[in-house]
Image 1: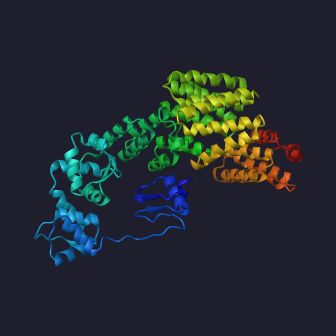
Image 2: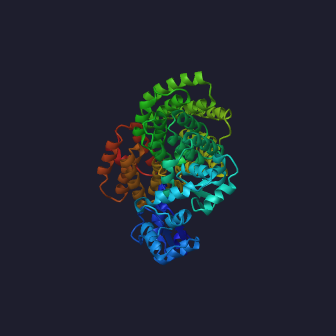
Image 3: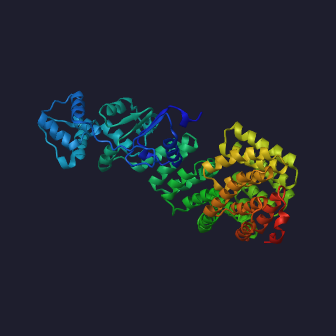
Length: 557
């Protein structure tokens, strides 16, 4: 039973702070689908939760509730004074709490700058260690864990932290502590701590956690730091250690990079994200812009990426040119990471040049280069997939199934979602080639669903193509038509060439239905005219389950 069928009560607070589109899409889905359950969301911005949502604009506490709150805080005021207080605070709970902290019998405050007045009154009464901790925490626009606060403060924080909690100046949610936006705004005017030093310390603390999510947080604060050397260092760390971020967290990473989009190291990474999403021309443009600005591992990465993108675009002369330049740099650097990249691109280029035996040799060299690196299951599973691809080209399908299955087992053993679904996509291809079309559909479906969910459209199209052709083999023409139309839609938005194979598939579907297929095949030919090798490969693969001689007069491109 899915959550949409349950009677769960789901409460999301401060949704305006969420920038993860997957969560926003999930909430919109739940808003539409929840039957017995309830979804309650608080936000300062009106979220788009669909037609079933009931929007209620919240007001402050009622007169009676507000009076009860300040009485509970031990404040005794006359009815006239309370009326004045209520008019100024509008019943805002935080404002009333701060008023209670600042209240001094006989002292007046200015209505037009109530919050500044109250906060300054509260702030002046704080001890120096409380002011320091409050200033430190106000630098961060997201909640902090206890250990993070302790690392930033550098001393025993327990008593100071809980004193500020009791005063209502810090809020707690589970193991997270944060400063309200109103208070942060005030503190930005009086803050005296060294922002750069604290951001640098926080970045170091986050990187010690050694995981992708904290790396992304560290990168966000490196951007705030506005230090090119820190950005450069973190991008190198991403290349060497957190390789999967551009696949697993593309949108979150892109949002941070976009803030510094003119920085050459940001362009290096933005291009990597575009490449993974199938926007090859956008990626190529950025890499060409910066290739002469960079040096060391950054230049090596851009050169290897240029080989990769030109190979995908079937511009193999350009691929060979950049591979030669990359090879010279690799010989100078003596870096195991760069060696691995080199053999990956050599394998791919030889494969595209129709030299499978040479590709197989360099694929095993990839494994050799991996032994010089720290254990990295993702890369090992990727190499296993490369070997499986080459055995496909050599028509040794049993061997390909063996290596694809090993890659899948490895990915599942280490909970590597991206590699798991990439392996499933490759297995669907192998099962298609051995004529097990039901297995091909089964594996491709898992891959398609995953890659569409993470918006990796390039990989989604790869899996869609084999599912579409398998549906044709099984006579399930409605399924084939739907997949073909999805491939075309993706090609229209990304320009990924294989997506245009959807027109070839639609031509086959219409032919099998007895309809007019020529318009589809002509559009497909036109879209693929710059990719003759790809066009022939599409017809060859489709020809396993459909008589492409029916397209004979239209075959040449």
